[in-house]
Image (cartoon, rainbow over all chains, first blue to last red; front, side, top):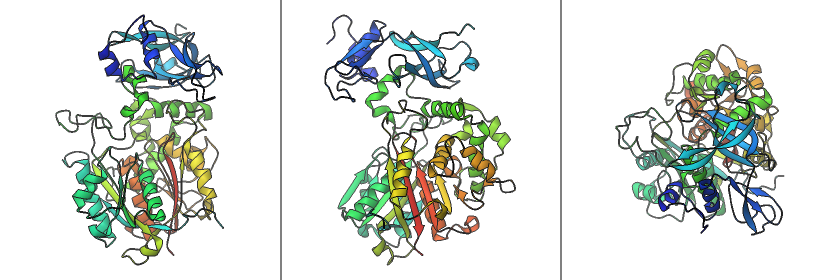
Length: 138
Length: 397
């Protein structure tokens, strides 16, 4: 069990946390987006798993990513809060996609492939990743 | 000479459905499945004692529930798969071919709940609970979506990317919706029979931008079933057999739904490449096409992957094929698409309706909506990422 901050049993149950994801969620508690990465071949893996699908090494750890990327795609559900669900391709690796909500001031100005950066929102008092356009003020 | 051993070996000999309703009904998924099975077995001129194989989905009704409900005395094979319906059918066709059973019944049954329909009566104790369907809530991946209100927007996001990369206007999707509805007006079984115009389409509410209400299949209560057996045995039965000429399943390298490598990289490509390799036919032999329409973007992608046109061009294909009087597409001047109305208008059945209609047309049983030529049908059922199934059926003549 990771030491610094512990996921409560209730939160773990609600999310459906498993041994693949424990480090990911523990990172969230500290507002760190930790993505699984193979120590042998360097391949980033999301969603997390502990055997590398590229080289089959079991030497997979987690690393904090910078949090920059581009918006691969999104959909807007006007009845949901927040309304925009997106898929972000992180800068660390081509095809490394993270689904997350997008906090966009003006949804109508949101464009595919725009630059986004990591931010945090709260889910049941727990920080979870979200992304926001870098030039939203424009 | 094909090296595909299953070619033309198995046939569909029985067809059953239930009434499709939006509200009321008050029948369980299992009840609807049993009702459809009774109709299908009866249609085939068989009895419960003739059935020795059953395939459905435990998310809907277990084979055990259906076996007991039908009073089938002995099974030698059963299978619970995920869906869509073609995947269940594929399991049964392979089982019959392999000799695991002789007569297999494939079924589905579903009830409209808040999972698939936001307008359900929330005081109804059944409809107000999101049923598991063949939902992904059981996947380990579900945890990563939970903080955002669950998995949402995968297909709408895919549609967004497809529109942007290939400059596809909303009208292209609208043509699918209008075509299907125009056919549904002649199908007494269809739930939505009022004509739909392009303006209606363009003015309908965005459910998940860029996806509007008419891009999404129409949730219903209903069941369907088909009976399959060997072609040899089929020729001794009551109804004209419809032959399973070839089938192919396709899943791409990243079946997790938000991790597709590109818009072009979908399971349909694999399914279609495989299908043509297993077939003695080609696209020119096809009279009728049944591209699945759980979402209209899936339909456009099937048309492209069938081989009618390049990626991004299916809307133009339909535009060029458009019959203004009938408000339907006639591809190459003759090939009709989703002649029952598809899941958009007949009702959402994960492809069971497409199978039912293809068999009905190939039997020559479609009444006023019977296609002039109906010898060969091409079906592309399932979504984009992990459950694409392609199939060629032909009449036994």
